[in-house]
Each structure stands twice: as C-alpha cells, then as structure tokens.
Image (tube, rainbow, N blue to C red; front, side, top):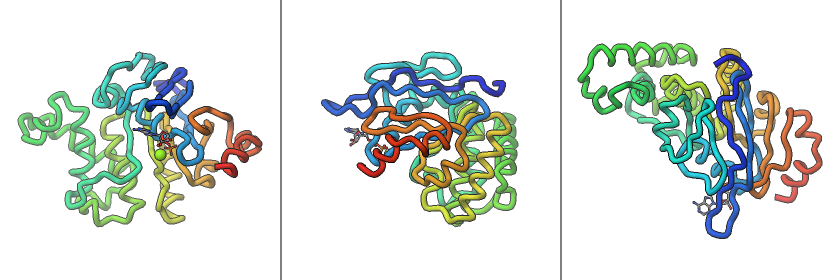
Length: 253
Ligand code: ADP
Ligand code: MG
C-alpha cells in the first residue's frame, strides 16, 4: 500500500472484563510508512488492545479494520493472512532450530497449504519459494551470517530480530511489536531502532508497545498514551512529552 494509507484502524474499541473496563473507546490508526507507539503505565490496557487488533481477543464494543475490511469475528490466523505480522512480549522461538527454520515457520503461515503440509514437503516447489522468501527476510534484517545458527544461541537482541524476520516472512503490511526493546543492551537497541527505521522507509506500518521512553521518543512518528484504559494524549513525541496529563499518569501510576 502507498505511504500514508491507513493499514489498521481501531474505532472506539472497548473491552470489559466483568466490571473492569480495560479499554474504553480506544481509537487509533497505523499508516503505511510510520512508526506509531502505544505507551502508558502498567495496567493501562496496552496488551488488551494489542490482543484485540491482532485477533487474539474480541472487543466488547467497537470495530477493528485491517486494510479497510472489518475484522469482527475473525481469528488471529485470518489477521495474519490479511497482512498483519506480530511479535510477542516474550521471545517465542524454537531455540534448538536454526534461524532459517524459525523464519520459515513465519513464511509457512502465508503458504496456501498451511504449515503442516509444507513441513511434510507435500509441495516441493512451494517449499522452495518459502525458503527463498525466508532467506530474503533474514538478509533484510541483517542476519545473513546466522542462517544456520540455532536461534537460542543468539544474544537476546538478535533473537528479537529473528522474530521480526519471521513476522516479515508472512509478508505483512503492518507489524505489531510488543516491547521489542525490553532487556536489550544499548547497542542492541540502536541496531533494532535502525532496522525499524529501515522498514518504515520501505513503507511498512509499525505499531510498538514499549516501556523504554528514550527508544520510543527517538523512533516514533506518533504516540498514543493510554491510562486506565482511556486515551489521555496523542501526538508527536514532542507534544506528548510536554503534555502535563502524561506526566501525571506516569507519576501517579
Ligand atoms: P498493560 O499491558 O498496559 O500493562 P493490560 O492490558 O495487561 O495492561 O491490563 C489492563 C487491565 O485489564 C488490568 O487491570 C488487567 O488486570 C486487566 N486484565 C487484562 N487481561 C485480563 C483478563 N483476561 N481478565 C481480567 N482482567 C484482565
Ligand atoms: Mg502489557
């Protein structure tokens, strides 16, 4: 999609857990070619929101649209097939398997036969195409030297990049990253920021949930701030940093 196209959009999304309102009419959109950050204190409702816009959980009210299509009632598999890639807060790699195997799993999610058939090599030609795509994403992410390395033996920073490569192998238009910088060393964070900046320039839309404020403020084009399930501020990093409500939310939380 061309730069500026709205890729994913939440409209007045509400999620209730019994009497608790975890998300209260949250609206947000991610456009092609931007990094949008969702921030807020612990318990603000960030993970709840992430789950709803990736099909892991259904909103109580409101609507999520992916590339203009309403996604109500669709499972996460369908979100992935229609252009959404995501990573999780905790690394989910097959540690003893190679980087290539791990990334190929992401490519299989997009294959016509599903990953079980592909893994059983019922279609060699499709298998070759998926492997080629996986190698392309591994190179794009700067991991070409580690194609055969067991994923679990890499430093955490590179494991996170393997997860991003795996998501990219599904050829998403929009990428959701849950705390991608958590636990990384300074240089690893710089490398990650550089990769995300490159992906943004290539036209991907990226939504990150992230606690590392320095990382967010340096990278994000736009920021949405949640507190107690409600959007309390949105804008550029400069605007959000100067907003007294944001300061109050963090100090009060
Ligand atoms: P964040 O990711 O911003 O830290 P969460 O989305 O995890 O916040 O949680 C928001 C609120 O919703 C919290 O009060 C949390 O306890 C509550 N919550 C989250 N998931 C559930 C659930 N499955 N059942 C009940 N309450 C939940
Ligand atoms: Mg969370």
